Image 1 (cartoon, rainbow, N blue to C red):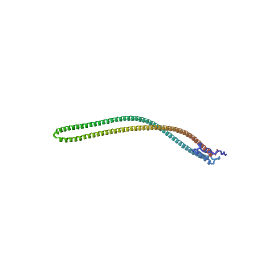
Image 2 (cartoon, rainbow, N blue to C red):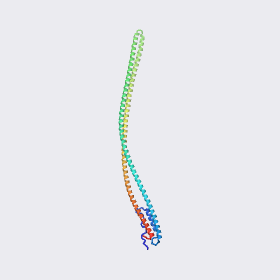
Image 3 (tube, helix red, strand yellow):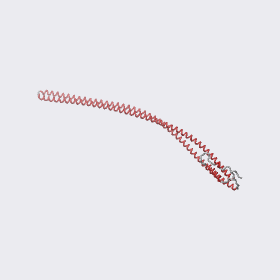
Image 4 (cartoon, helix red, strand yellow):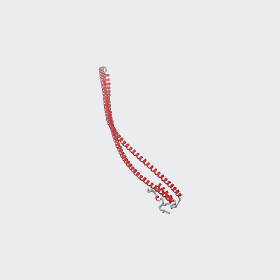
Length: 351
């Protein structure tokens, strides 16, 4: 008796899985091999065979089924190992992410510590600036006192010089007066002697008188010359004194202008330093704001990445569940194909 051919065995197992990726999975390959075995075997008709042949064929088919099942189990084990490796990699990635988060927290703590240190440094700088201002004021007071003392010293020296000059002039006048008195005394003595000798030597007296007159004229001329020289020297001394005073005044004015210029330069330097400090403060504030914005962006990015990782993990779990279901279905189809092949080969049934 012949049974209808019906569907070919293994026809249900053709094609790829529901993934639509076009790749053949290990279970599909096993099923395809089983279908090829059935297609290449021409025993689709029912025929009477001996019990020994049936047993031998059943044994061979069972051996083939065992090899197929072993092949399928090996493939499943390989896939499970790959999945475990992927899970370990994901765990390592999560650990690295946790470490990076800890490092970012440590960096934020270090930045806060640096900000506090910068604030303390700014406070110390302000204190040092106040101290420098006080020191500069004290130095200005000291310089003013030193200038006053120097002026007083100069005035005292000038007074001493004037007193010495006056004393010298007085001593010179005293000496000249004494000389004049001595000369007058000598003249009187000479006149007395002349008077006593006039009677005896009139001619000699006349000659002597002439000589004395000449001498007195010469002396008067010399006295006049000495007086003019003294006046000229006094004028020169007064001129030199006035010149020295003018020079001193000019030097004082130059020193005052230099001190004013120095003070102006110091003030400009202070203003420039203050401007630089303000610029540095603004720059630090801008940098801190940028760092804060960058940290916020990084936190947002990390949150988004975590969300994406969670969604990817969920999708991967769903895919793994689908793959496991597909594998179970493929195993079931392969076993069913093998069982159909066994029935068709050994018992002569067709489906």
